Length: 116
Image (spheres, helix red, strand yellow):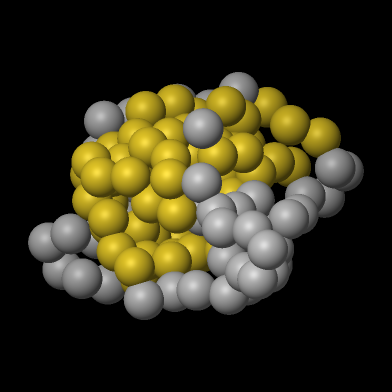
């Protein structure tokens, strides 16, 4: 974990994140994932899909599922708190990968938009 010497990231249990889904499997609200951020890992649940980003024309549309090769804004609820910054605050401490908790395959990459 990298952070300025005079600050320490706050411990949070909820993340709003931008992700790019790289796995053929579909993710839905309520699905369990593992978030890997630096050397830290936490079990998490997808609690909300805000929208899918349409990259071709820089617009957004509602979505109820996360599909392969698409970008989304989602909300994750962590089972244990995690000390993390937003990507805007600290690019080293604001990015992560999502892992399937059963197969341990990487399923998405992302960055923290808001930590609460």
